[in-house]
Length: 252
Ligand SMILES: Nc1ncnc2c1ncn2[C@@H]1O[C@H](COP(=O)(O)OP(=O)(O)OP(=O)(O)O)[C@@H](O)[C@H]1O
Ligand SMILES: [Mg+2]
Image (tube, helix red, strand yellow):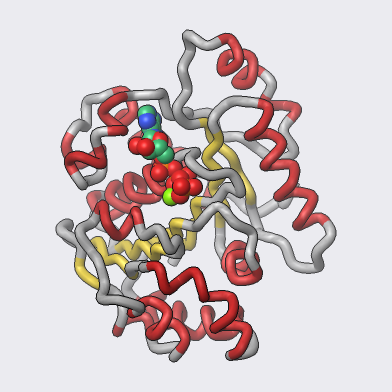
């Protein structure tokens, strides 16, 4: 099983849009896929029409139940969702009381490995202790960024944070989202990837109103507008992500 976290300290950059589309593309390529929504806003759960009862997410998590008992079918074959709700805002407090969040999460995830090809986390824009544990355990941290100096700064902050830690994620890789080539700043930022403190994927996702309409359709863009610009870019991105996952980890 490969585990991928969509993460950025910055909000509104396309973490959920990307998590939902990549999870869909994974399932569509006949791989059993689980999307685990870690954001109390529960937007990814909402896109997949999966909304748990009140406070359910934290109750299930804090009991450290096997993951099979909390995953829920999505409207798409081979794609399951572990939904979030507002109770997750207390996750740090709950897991701290239980001791090692890391051990608990590992125990919950282990049974998935048998029949799941990809586990995808949609993370909130925070660097709380639980999110830190999560990022340390994944095969790939994928960081969506809108091309601007602030996105670079957010990444530098994440890099600096992990630089001082004994434990760090295996691979942190960025990619650009909501790219608008009519904007000089976007064009210049795309050209400056060498200055970034981490590798940046070649594929970028253009700004596209079809992506915004995901909120109206309540479905992954790639499931209803495959020939659109952003959908095509997500298809390319998923291929590139798989190439990255096959490469040995060099942690540069
Ligand atoms: N390629 C795109 N083109 C146009 N709009 C986009 C694109 N990708 C995402 N958006 C829009 O940008 C907004 C933020 O996207 P999204 O919710 O995926 O970000 P996020 O990083 O998950 O935000 P948060 O930090 O709040 O969880 C949404 O309204 C979404 O529809
Ligand atoms: Mg989000």
